[in-house]
Image: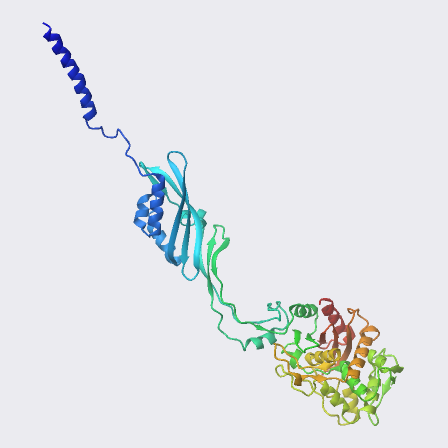
Amino acid sequence: MRSRPLLALIIIVLGIVGGSVYALTRPAQSGSRQPEAPGAEDTARAYLTAWEGSDLATMDRLAGGTPADFIERHVSFSEELDIESLSLTPGTIRLQGAQAAEMSFKGVRQVKGLGTWPFSSTLKLAVRDGRWRVVWSPETLHPALKDGGRLQLTETPGEKAEPVTRTGERFPRDNGAEDYLAELRADLPEEPSQGGYALEAVASDGRTRRLLGDDPQPAEHVRTTFSRPVQAAAARALDGVERPAAIVAVRSSTGEILAIADRLGGRHAFLGRYPAGSTFKVVTAAALLSAGLAPQSQVSCPESYSPPGGRPFRNASGTPSGSLTLTDAFAVSCNTAFIEQTVRALPGGGLVKAAELFGFNKPLKVPAASCVIEPHGDDNELASDAIGHNSVLASPLCMALAAAAVESGTWRQPAMTKRPKEREDEVPLPPAVAEGLRTMMRAAVATGTASAVPLPEGTAGKTGTATATGGGEHAWFIGYRDDVAFAVLVEDGGSGARSALPIAARFLRAL
């Protein structure tokens, strides 16, 4: 009777225990637990390691939702930009809840021919299908690819050697010296210097930003003697001048050409031969001073003068007549005074000798330029030569050099490029002659024919009006100020005081 309840109890206990054992040992039902996945940091680091090793297939497996051309994009990126190597340094992982994370990283690409190209970007990660995956986008390759941006490798062309100013600057546009620079350019190498490359980021709106660059090798430009500000002043002084005109400026102390603004055509600022008119009285005055006259010597200025046995010569209208000092006769440009004194004092070729002190009848050391005067055949010819006509022919360059010789006391050969100082090219004027000419040229500006237009203080000069072939008149003004000597010529411009002097004033005020 007692054994039956005990047996029942044993059966109940065994049933409970057996049920528990069964519960502990039976297989788990499918889908009842999520499998463990690698962490976000492990995935990010694995992706960067594969990328650094160019294991694009592994990168594709570690990323989620990549485009079909994922591998092709990476290959073309490296090929088009000439990437030789890539090194990557992971940063710190930052979790953004349970399903997202991001890791910043730094990279250094080696670009062929350009060197190292550092960049920074961010890997974004998310849980997809139970695993951490890289959420790839174009800016993962480089931040510049965001929002449709792109990268491009462009070639920077090399430079062609060019003439530049004395300070290495390029010439201003529309400068009037183009024909002269072209001649200098002809002697330079035709091949440009070695070019370079630039890596650029191009935003979707077209804005370009340079990321990396290999600058082209600089060309070996030839430095000229030109001054950029003086050249600009000369070119702009001719703006609005209707007649063909030119300005040549030189440094008085060296003969270096500072500016050429030539709108005569055919390089006539150098090669043209024009009657110099009364600007040649600088040379005639030098000859008379060498023959014994002084700036204060009294001379006669009649309305008309005829050399012995010759034709009559007259002054321009408005020229005062009577007895004047040589300086005043120069200042008011009295033709008859200079003709009479020349015929009396310089019958034996003294005028030609004086002109040769100022570079006449001498080849100038710039292409084919020269100015001339011939021995006179009779007093009529000598009289006409004395006032810059007959055989006297000069270019603006010649007359600028003449003005420079007055200021510095020495005539010098012109130069457009730097060259060793050649003492044999220097022709000193007698000191008393040079000082006398300075007195006369200052008087012409202060009280004479050049006083009608205000000029900057310290300017000295001489106007000239020369009869041209065909009956017109060329307008001249030559002068100097602060080691800058110049000549202005206006073809068929009429009076020098009316046409050339205002141009010179604009030029000087712009310096």
